[in-house]
Length: 236
Image (cartoon, rainbow, N blue to C red; front, side, top):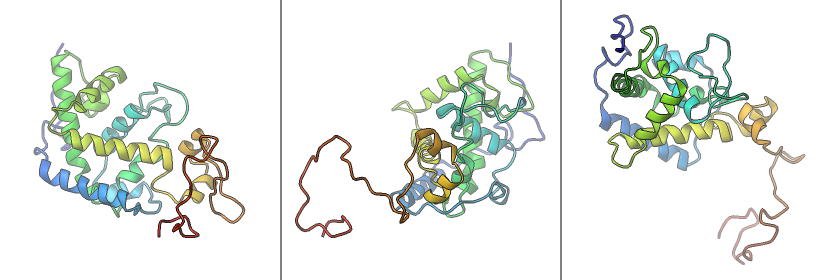
């Protein structure tokens, strides 16, 4: 069997897309990591942001398939192809990974089409090597069966992989979308029953809207409080 040729009507397909500028992508990812480290993830954004930033069509499907491979969920409908339906329950897509990736306060969204093209190019090469017939109406990565998506992503994280940093940061963002509702205020996310927080049984805040943890995680104090610690718990 052979893979199907690129479809001319979809410029995001690796067969018709210009090669991604790796340095530009890595610069944007570095800036994204800096924002994450500073705790500056933005408030909620709607799915319409994807259209405003150019992350449409095949790009969205490809990034959804990437996220679903890392944190799988159940299909949204019988015709859903981006989500493979490998498990029951919510996954990264239901938890808002596209909203996180297309956040207007992160520099990543305009580059998502190029990142998707890079992933689809790798998927096309993988399919060719393994004689997998890809549907011509889907992005190459979306067209891969789930077990092949998983195998391919595993190779992208190899230490010698030149684009490893790209996939590492995207994986971090995928995890944040599910584990912490990164694109939402935490209280709003809980009120809206964010699927990731609900799945993890994330605790609600106290009556004053603040989170406190009166019990030690390990059942005992692991260290004494430094005498210079401020009332808020911060170091002096």
